[in-house]
Length: 413
Ligand SMILES: *[C@@H]1O[C@H](CO)[C@@H](O)[C@H](O)[C@H]1NC(C)=O
Ligand SMILES: *[C@@H]1O[C@H](CO)[C@@H](O)[C@H](O)[C@H]1NC(C)=O
Ligand SMILES: *[C@@H]1O[C@H](CO)[C@@H](O)[C@H](O)[C@H]1NC(C)=O
Ligand SMILES: *[C@@H]1O[C@H](CO)[C@@H](O)[C@H](O)[C@H]1NC(C)=O
Image (tube, rainbow, N blue to C red; front, side, top):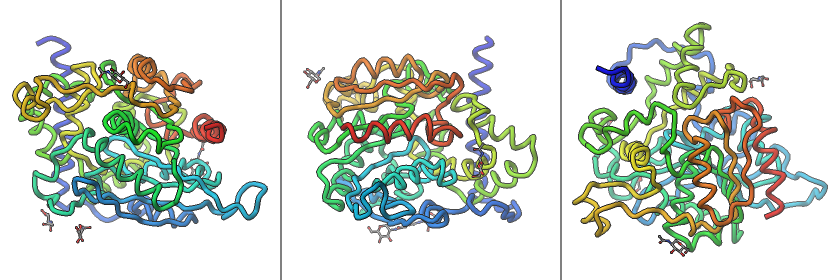
């Protein structure tokens, strides 16, 4: 067996092991209760309240019946910011998390460094999205999440239904005619696909900020790419990933991350490096204080099809709809290949913020995306050479390098 073959097998096995360990916590409850850092167990609204911000919970129903939860931070710790003490106009900012994540990804830091807190304190009305299938959006008007039918979606449906539903809801609730969109990772994929599939939504977005942006994944370094060879055989991959739901939030796993990743230095480093293994190594930007909390919120669930869709793009190198195979495509799209997304339809002014050491949004893939966007206004490479995929939300310097920049650009749109 070749070296490559062994490596591929190792990666596949680790994925299976991670999955099995994760799944086994579903049925067993052997881990003792330890409560060192209560933040590990808190849900998004509880965390927001704990850190002194107001929070609202809103349900949005998509055209295809999924019930999505939005978390809103309507204003910062001080109600009025700026020189005008009576200022009540707070333009809405919608923030969309990445793969396997949730609205929590924007607040797993102290208020000084948490992206959602930074935007709220700067005077914006902050709305945090939750993609269908995650911990907070695991419900449907007709389908039960326990049934396979619920999980028949990838980021195609998030783009086609979730994005329009939440944009309409936020605009209707706030009375604004446009919002700002900030996306991380899959949160950018959903946006580009959404604006391409539903071009009429372009006029509802003032500007889009894409952090670690992902459209094609031909060059990614993350071991996720080792799923790609199997993505043609949907049955193998569903066996590897779990039948329909992928890494759902699970209390036993969360306890496990606390026990393993909180107390001992060596184990802590192993936990952190496992995260880096998926996203790129950058020890300087990682605040170890938040590691258990970040890992505790690290797997909030999606559908297996969503992961397969990314794996398909590693193979195809194209930004296109889910590939159902020759006959499946014919049935669904009336052609043998999946229709491509047309980036020319994304007419919103877009700012891309990307990094050299990002294992999920490789600079070569980002360059391809940048070349395809007709209204790219800012194309900003992070100045730190080690800056990685997760530093956009959790990096020690993310305020200075990412959000202060966004806040500076926003008034110009
Ligand atoms: C890491 O997070 C803790 C807790 O929020 C904070 O007190 C500390 O200043 C942070 N460290 C750095 C280097 O930012
Ligand atoms: C799911 O949505 C239905 C309404 O369609 C509601 O009655 C039910 O309580 C919700 N379930 C959960 C777990 O939120
Ligand atoms: C889904 O399954 C879980 C356990 O398998 C069960 O606890 C839960 O009640 C089920 N939910 C519904 C809505 O049937
Ligand atoms: C993509 O969209 C642009 C602008 O609407 C259009 O001119 C072009 O023909 C489209 N390309 C494809 C392949 O559909």
